[in-house]
Length: 314
Image (cartoon, rainbow, N blue to C red; front, side):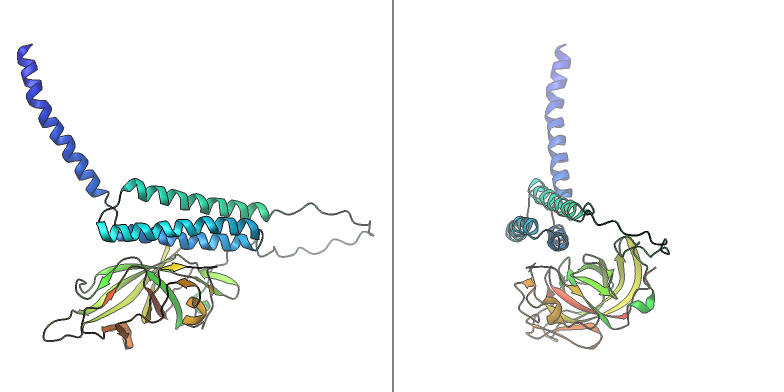
């Protein structure tokens, strides 16, 4: 019995150390990153779209939800600043904001469905019977979403996408992959072919960091894939402009073919200052620093992308 007691007293500290190490490892593996916070911001953008759809049917309810969303958007910005300064963020704090945003989106969608219910028909005078009419096509809201063809998204159509993570000529390597999300719906002939929040995959084609011999840093990025409603399509996209922007104010726009940057972003993105200061974009999507520093594109930066080869949506 004494030997068992001694063995237990020796093993207990070791077990405690192993449990502590496991807890630390688990906490590190669940570490919140800037990309995670950007996903929260993207969810806020999608909530904006849900509220916009509700506003056409119930303006008062939409305004109430918009007030809640504004507060949540401020909390996301707070998390981003806190993570940047303290380099750490509690998982519980992140999960709380994420859950509340998703709950708001659910309420907005439910309210939109409820307010679109067909009202009971009013009493009308009896009319003489008429011959049965030929079958009519279903209303647009009843039709399944039509699939788009390659020709429905013309070449050179431009999309605004929001970077999900930082891009810097000082750390990027050739063939590095990164992601961005579309900032607005692409609507052609009344159909939303590319919804806001669709993921576009980019690749670093070339990079030249700033140095003593060559102070001018350069980085070329292109886009080679877009994921729409869970389905991926190959594309070829060239960056034509970089714009500062941190948040969304008001309704999300519905992008149309040929719309300029001002039509899509002007007055919509909070904190937008126009073209990104300190960079110049040339032909082929080459981004060059104009101040002798590395090219740095922060998460949330808006890139205008020209679709040289549009997706063949099926």
